[in-house]
Length: 116
Image 1 (cartoon, rainbow, N blue to C red):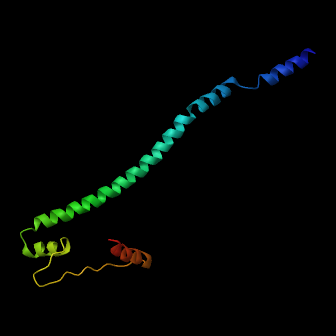
Image 2 (cartoon, helix red, strand yellow):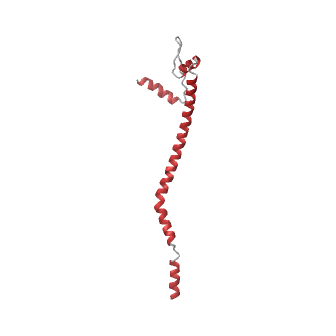
Image 3 (tube, rainbow, N blue to C red):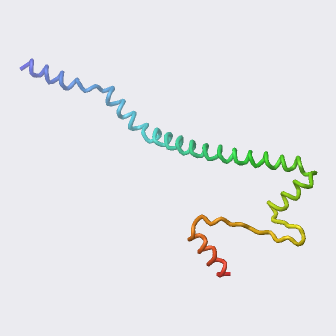
C-alpha cells in the first residue's frame, strides 16, 4: 500500500507550478500584447500614408519654387495663367477637354447639369 501512495504522489507532483504561473502571467498580459500589436500595425499604415503625402507635397513645393524662380519670364507667366487659371487672350476661347473614364459618370454629370 505504501508504494501505491508513493506513485500517486509522484503523478500529482508532475504538474509544475511554474508552468501554471507562467500561463496565468501570459493570460494577464495577452490584452496588452494584442493592443500593442494592433497599434503597431495601425501606425505603420498611417506612417506609410503620411510618407506618401510628404513626397507629393515635396514635389509640389519643388514645382512652386521653380515657378517662383521664373516669375520674371513672361512666357512662364502666360503658361501659368493659361493652365492653372484658365485664362485666355482677348478673342480666344478656352476649351476644357474632359476625359470620360466611364459612361455612367458621364450620364450622371449630364443629369446633374440639368438639376440646377
